[in-house]
Length: 87
Image (cartoon, rainbow, N blue to C red; front, side, top):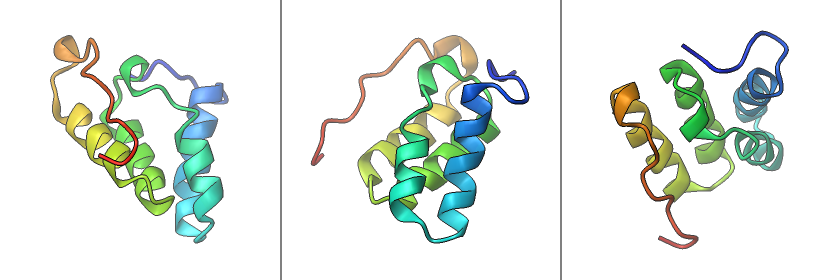
């Protein structure tokens, strides 16, 4: 269950990231995806769309982290360490 509700900042950021990626707007996709806190959003679909935005924006490490985070059961999503820039 997503912590965001329709029209919430998280829901809007998720959709902004995804549609910007589809439109080829790399910077906008990355900026929107970074507005989402994966540790606070337990919706696998949201996390997938965030990973799409991160990947489109060139943040491959964080996209991989988001994708791996999405695959974990919600009870174990207390927060793996985030990737460091350049890793």
